[in-house]
Image (cartoon, rainbow, N blue to C red; front, side):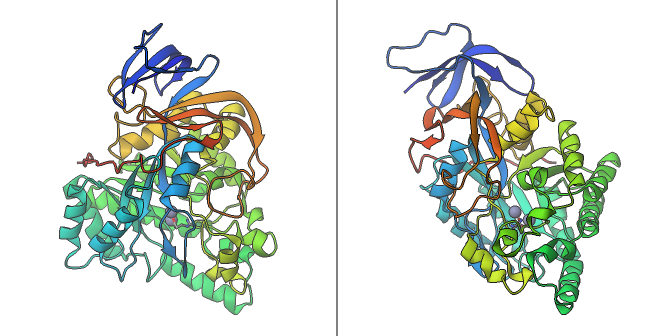
Length: 459
Ligand code: URP
Ligand code: ZN
Ligand code: ZN
């Protein structure tokens, strides 16, 4: 089956202009003006609309046993939510905990996705301990095409690794040419501050942020960078939330440390006052690192606009209100996480591009291309070029709407961005040449998604 997208304004990081895109056998085979197509070709008229490369969310949680419960999405629901929002590839955190076997965990995470996702996907493999068998297991996982690791400096005794384990992971990653992503908060300080606040009777969701202050994240970011510096490995800070942590990351970059920075949608648009709302309203907005004081948002937008923040992910992690209420007596038991996979592209376009905070090329770069380059997917994904997978987003810039739990596809009973304005959304979304979503509706095929095998590139 072939597809012709006619007369759209095709936008990539380094080019912009009106063109037709012809797709055969899942890949882009021609880009040009007035392209001819065989009689049975599906034709989409994109006149007056933008055409973007499929967007990539580099940080999502779908199957996640965490904080005495499980995140709500399945690969069916998450991929539908992703696609209606223009995301055609996501990278899920594979997160067995410290007591689990890493290889068994990897197989389990794969089995949860296989044959279910409607869009393509990959994994970051979490290293949650470094035991005798870890090196050989990680080598097998990399040989299987999963060429990025994840470490947590937070979540002591569960996902968290100590400094020795971080060193061993980075040293191995350097030898294998694998990039290491990291959640950077000082686990010991978080545990001590939580304990102190609880002893003082401070139990509500508004105390989550003070238990993990900006300095705790800055320390984690700086320490991760120092370990990169001394192992020569390549790193990627996930969900960086604040100015202090950004300074730590940029200071490392300026020393030549091979480090990239991701911030996630909630930190650009929500501040800590959301988590200070009473009861479950506040709990809905508990995530880690926490939502911060508002001034940090301008810092993140500015850093994003110049590429000092490299990518925008979501840290998509849906827990419903009943699950959030597990923490009604103590903020330390509120499952951490906010969903966002469905809203990232539209909200970033609206509050970034439309509000003049982000150029169109940086928007494409931050939401697609740079993740493809960092995680070994480029130029198969992340651009519109002959030979690339035909993951395409025809984008209607005239659409006006609002984020609402009532219309969302994400499997959750609230939306953390409820009521926010949306100015522009995908009208057509393709996965390897097949139309999977139209105008906010999923019209595609579940199970179309493939696990993307990736080669190490960070030697
Ligand atoms: O609050 C968060 N971020 N939940 C998901 C787990 C993680 O730390 O990424
Ligand atoms: Zn995290
Ligand atoms: Zn995460």
